[in-house]
Each structure stands twice: as C-alpha cells, then as structure tokens.
Length: 398
Picture (cartoon, helix red, strand yellow):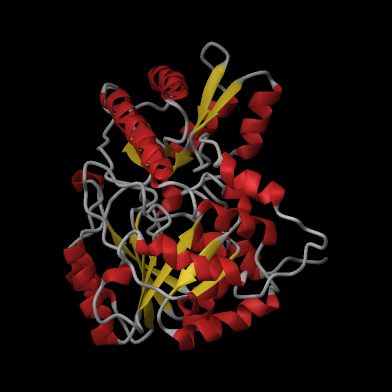
C-alpha cells in the first residue's frame, strides 16, 4: 500500500482553516457565517493601485527576477524611510508572501534538528514552516493574565542551547496584539549578539498600532547588521492578501545570498502582485491612517462587546487586528466546531479560530480563541450576538 511521508503525517492542521468544511456545510444549509477566524480584511484593496495594475502594458507575463522586480526593490526603501528606517535595495528580497519569507529564512539559517525559540501563543503557521524545515520549536509561554506580554528575557536566555539558531517574534503580535517595547527588543538584541544567533521579526502589522503605543522596528536596533532579519508583506497593509507579495529585509548580505539559492529554485514571486505592490507605495499617507483608525474603532467595539459577556476573559490589544480571549467552555476546538455544525441564531453563526493551535506546549489554549476583527462594526455586532447566545446554549459551558 502506498503511503504519504512521515513529515506530512506529523504536520498539524491549521487552526485557522481546519474548520472550513464545517463552515461550507453551514452555508450550504443556508446559514450565514461571519468569518472571524482568519485575517482577511473586508477593507477594499486601494483602487488606485488596482487601476495602475490594469493600466500596465503587458505583452508577455514573464518570470520576474528571483529576488524580485528591480523597480519594486528600488522603490521599497521609500516606504521604509517614512518610518525613519534606512535600507537599500540590496537589503531586500521579494518573496511569495510573508509565509515564504519565513520559510526561506528558516531554510537558510537552520539545519535539521536545530532549535527556534518563539514566544507562545504564536501565529499558527510558524509550526508548519518549522516542521517543513525540520526545526524544533522551543516555546516561551506568555499569559492572558498580563495581556500576553513577553516574560522576562532571562526566560528566553535560559532556553538557548548549542542547537539554538534563532529567536522568532511577530511584532505587533499575531494572535495577541501585543506590541514589543523597544527596551525588550534591545535586551533581545544583546542576547542574540552575544550568542551569535539570529533575531527574526515578522512585522507585517507594522502600521496597526493604537493609543500612541510606540513601535520599534528591528531595523532600528543598533549594531544588528548581521543578526536581524525582518519579514514583511503587503497582505494586511493594503488588504491585498491574494497578491502574495512579501519580503525579507536584512543587512546580512551573506544570508540573502543563501536565501537567493532557494528563491531561484522556486523561480519568482507573483509578477502582477509586485506591480500592484509597487503602485501602492505611492498612496498618500492618509490611506493607512484611515485604515488604522477603522481598525482601532473595531478593536474598541469588539473589546466592549466581549467584556460585557459573563465569564469571558479578554484584554484590549495594542496592535495588529486580533484579540485572543478565554471563554467559559470545556474545549475551544469542540465549541468552534459546534458553532458551525449545531448552532445558529436568526440564520447566522460565527467562525472562530481555536486557541490550542497557536501553542507548541501541549494542553495550552484549550479554552481560548482568536478573533480577527476584520469585519465592519455592524457585522462584528451580529457575530458577537451569535457568540453571546451560543455561550449561553453550549452544552459544554463551564
């Protein structure tokens, strides 16, 4: 009998997408599903960028260079300069979304059996990328009790072994919305320099920081030319998830040359997406200011609704567009599936992401969920109505 690989069998299902068949079945029954499980915004992709793409004369849609379209790489420093970050095109590699940026970085930095330290809960797909690269995740656990702030950095330092090759952060954090202070990043930079390892920071939510919370990019950290690797993407920034355009930014050109070897095997990133991404750089700053203001409105609205539900534990996130909450239930995986299989309110239900898939440590997150506040406040209200009533009816309620 033919078999699939052990590697494939060891991969866990995405907590973000594993319930899609149940959502499809609910919709087939005529139930409206509010999708709060995934970071797919309902904000329109900038029309000016789409128009520029439509107006671009294309006779042959060719492969782009493996490192990215040159005009786009030359223009990206203009974007970073707005944030006081100085980079040059030679510091940039264009990738097929942030997902490929993380995977290629791991492949170029780490060997099979090496260790990657990540604060948990973390973006669930990091587990998949690490598994594909043959890398062991070493988690450092944060808690909802202090809004998922990073534990004292000595907890991270204690996890470092001869097998440790990198620390991976998401800032602002997906799934918690935590924003790492400059002081913490500087402490981590001292550790990675002393240990000769890398600090990889996923900064795809850079713009979405609220309440005047200061944001510090890893590219601002002094003396980190060799150790810092930044992952970026246009997916959330310009509500262009389907463009699949990300990037790796590092001043470590030896590392970029290693990454390029892998990039050449996959040939090139999406050409049409890069044309759209290049056009988006010319958008007025007001575009992102307005989008951030809208997410802030949704953030506060969602927090208010959740805070009013008895026994729900939540907090006000500082950044990104996610909120991680603890519910009075027996098991979030069962509850989220029950919402789609057995519950509806006025012909509607809500799809959420169970929390356990955002942890590497077994047994954690079993009563937690991630909510992506990517829908307008009217839809968020309807979704929270569903959640509140569902919690009152759920058979496994605590």
